[in-house]
Length: 304
Image (cartoon, rainbow, N blue to C red; front, side, top):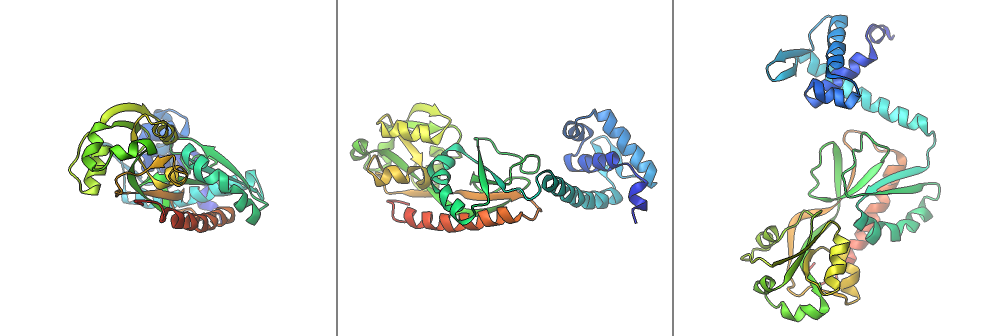
């Protein structure tokens, strides 16, 4: 039954899969934690063991042959299954769900609602990995991620949960000074370096002739920007999820009544091509329901 598999080395199969996926010996070596020379030797050994060339040696590097491409496709699927099996074996019956989110999303939305997920699934402990970076869902212990963006990230299946329109936000005391888009030029901009938003894109999406506000603080967290704006130090481009609470209690105002669609939203992300576990499917189902409720709230806000 395992005659073919027993005739080759697993390290060779891993090397071939990594080279085909990364496109180079060095890329595979970095991933596997060995030298490029060692990867090359493993590939050569496997080619001898199976009796056919898997890569063409060209000036541009190694290109899979037809046989190599077919083998890579099946190896890729097999290694994903092995990865899932090992992860499950390490924690049989695991009731911990690791969720990767940005700190702003964790603070403004997820953490205040986690008790409702626990009420529905008391056997599942949710562990939040809050960071601004994009976590590799294939190479980490993270089960699921929630990201804001356009939905296009390599290596993940992304489902849109909550579209977000972008608007100009100011402290209530400043709102009277911003009656038209042209008034933005007289205000100080508080910018979020971590966001996918800038004034040029916003004016273009809103269909308004652009003006440039005065440059103010540049911060790396949208919540820091929000607090700076609430303190009256400038204006910012905000979106409903981070600003809803401050809009509702009057600390923040949306003076122009214009919300631009930049194609952004919150997405739930899982590893591409991998069937999510039951706990992930349950979590995503809960997210859909909770996000639908949030969308109804956002629909009542000005300019969103």
